[in-house]
Length: 212
Image (tube, rainbow, N blue to C red; front, side, top):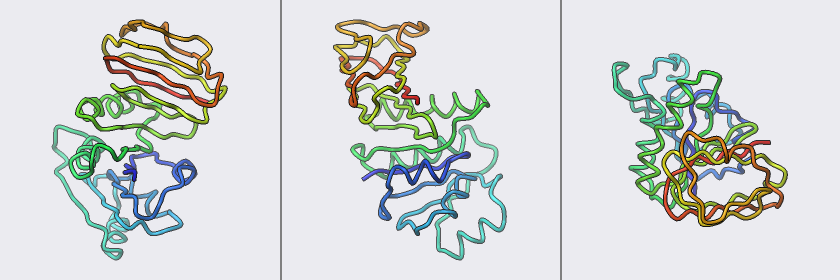
């Protein structure tokens, strides 16, 4: 089972392409509720969480009519609604259940970097966290990773700390027993030459971006 987190900008087509199941939980951070309201099915487990500063009274009324729990927080807080939603997901659901975030990545770089980097403590804690976007998947991981159905996609590895790569497979430019370092661009814009790629990590923490 997976846990979905809807942030601002979450897209319906992207979400449905993941073939969600009714029983898979959805946590909506503030305006992420817009997507939940537009789904062609009623999720079994849906929650709205945040300061609600971008949720209209009509949308809140929809939640109440449909018995959707709302957890409201003060606007004056030291974390974003997205971080709050991820924190809730990681506290409530087991580490083995992947947390997939939709939305939260935009042309606003402070917004985007804040959402991506706020996942790091949870990844370090053993949770699998990724972003699913219209033309990208973003994986934040300290463990080895397999990416399926990615032939001809662009694959970039961005280390957040010194990361020891045991090996890679399926990529045009392979890595073997190498350390990749933060603030270097060497492992950007690789190409997947097979339908599945593997990145074997001994130690470290990286962002893997799959684009098409």
